[in-house]
Image (cartoon, rainbow, N blue to C red; front, side, top):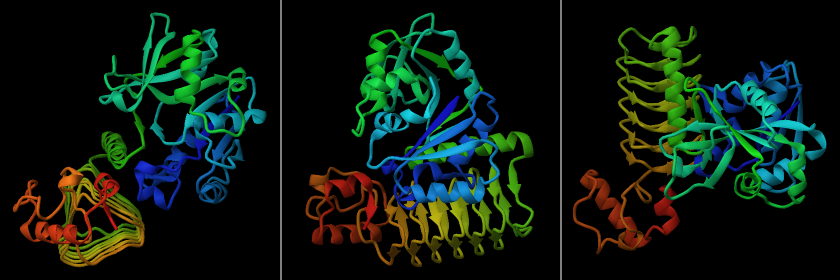
Length: 413
């Protein structure tokens, strides 16, 4: 049996982290999600070949496979999409390489689910598609599924405003090749919106509920990436204790650590640094004296200068954070960006290679776009931002009011 990993998406909601890497290559605890999927598939005897459906930044994926997974025991085939084809179109593009039935996995799914269970479930039913199902807290973001007592999917609705259940499509399927006849070649087709509902209406789709002990995260947004790291850190904490420090990392005795925390190889931590729960410090990162980190992800080779505070934020590769900087409330910094000394940044997204020398744009003030004007905004910040920041924001808004897209995406541009 073949396994198809759909790895061609742009990862728009994960920008700026996905601006410089394809979404399946976004790392969790320093390891690309694609590697987790391949290691999981390696254990399944039925799978003899993995097909990677690629498009966006496909060279990055190919380079990773050739350099880091060269000793992988199963065959890996690359199939390039000539244009964005979405999930259904990408499946049509691999039609000539798959057998009668095959496994499909979305490349942004972070899970420890045993795919062999889904394969076995598919063999026992008479459907053409078997869907892995999982329960989530926010089903309105996913495809909501209702099954009967026999496991047949009787109702499917993609991203409903009022979900009837919290059981959702996990982006993992066993599919009969016959369904590919319904997909036109060379066109954008959404499998979950256009193909799956059609076969549900014909009674040919079954569901398989993932066991409660399995975790599942759709790595679609920075919040999801935080959640994946939280799960991974909790898993390690149960096995190896509340913090992990790699052998060649340098951590002085006066560093305060409150786990779960993971400090990767080559990292150098200064004196009197405080590292709080759910922080990942990537390889070769340098953290200078008296810095403070809490629930943050530092992908690697970053430099955090002295007395800076990083909280609830994600730093890409090679980021430089100056002295006395405060970065918090869901800020996301793209690769090789630099934030200069003495700045306070709340919840903004900073583009890769950007140099932030002053407050240049919108800083997470949740106001209606039509009201983001100096003459219409209140004298004091409704979110309690420091007065100096709010005044600067108002002055900038007077010169160049943020557009709707900037308001939504919280870009520093």
